[in-house]
Length: 76
Image (cartoon, rainbow, N blue to C red; front, side, top):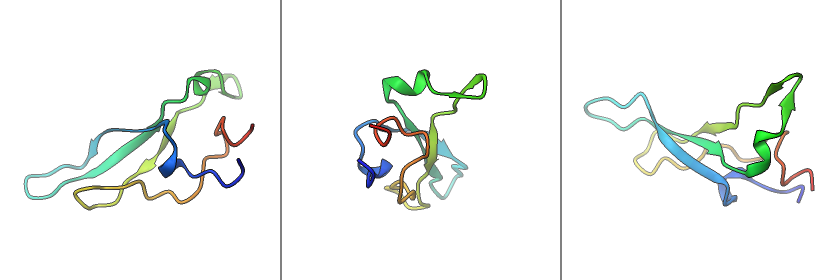
């Protein structure tokens, strides 16, 4: 699955918005909720499962066009 894209993955979940102000919506924050991300280590620390931000529109789709290097689905 080398051509995987996070924006189309079922494990990509939106969690909150950044910089929401009175007259405009902020960008959505996207995280990987795959169960194997808890076991992936960066040195001796667990990775941060943050994927990226959405665009500055109301729908705010994920702006990332590829996948993260640590993606458990890309390694299979």
